[in-house]
Image (cartoon, rainbow, N blue to C red):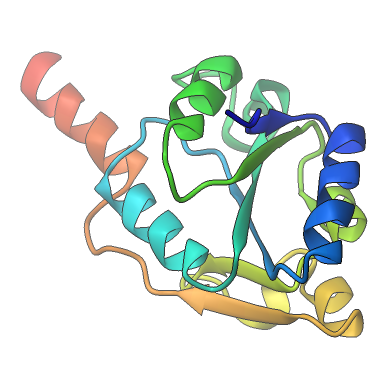
Length: 160
């Protein structure tokens, strides 16, 4: 069984092999804290855009800088482990920066995917991917499905 969770340098060798095989590489990124239906539907739709889905996963430190000290709920090792069991994800690369720009620039996927709550011009790495001949695709999100909704439901039901 292939090792899905990779660091950047070993993954770049894998990337070269995939490209040599003519595979279309799809990249998306995010926190993926408290995995839910919306995540799974989004990832499945992203995977349909090519032959291999690479997931850039925010490290715990980057999540704290972006979302505050109380997040993530689930540590990065556990988030990566759970995500690695999803068949639609081919590889996971954890990144430490606040954005995946350096990772995207290194991977240069054929297709960069984000949720439709982003305008293409606001997607980190869009310019780099387009300049390299790739495309940027947005995918509609599953309504009323988010980690925030799950957390709010838990608080409403169990903490009041």
